[in-house]
Length: 173
Image (cartoon, rainbow, N blue to C red; front, side, top):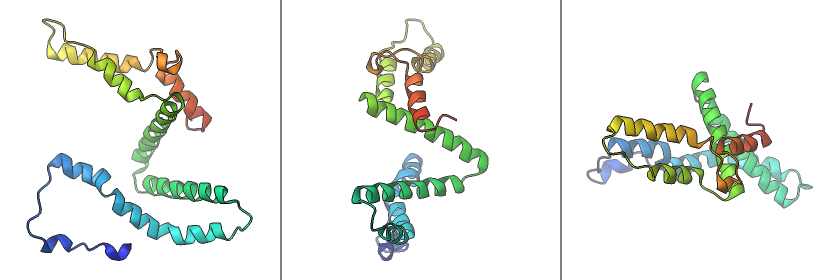
């Protein structure tokens, strides 16, 4: 796969369409992920598969789980190592919270961000209310929503449900 990448390919294809600042940002964060995936595959896969294949007694399901866990762990290590220490700690905390929310969504078959969006979209600006006051009220609702018991979470608050999932995996510390 590494042989397929040509950094000069765009030089010979005519004018490139310019990206907006937002498109360039999204491309940098997400658009390059297929290329990153190929590079990481080339970086880890051979040695990883060889080490797993050495254990002939390991059942196939355990091998598949091990491949996933080793890959995810390696990628997470790379991400954290390339960040400044204070940034890495903040990214790790955000990632832990996002994983906790995703686990909660899966467990309860909900989309908490979607539910929050619905709640916010139902709020209407009061007559005579300034845009600034309305935005503040929306922001206050967004902050408070995480501590309001939700029927889709069996009456639990989103914060409590997320913390429970994080605790289950040791991500709450």
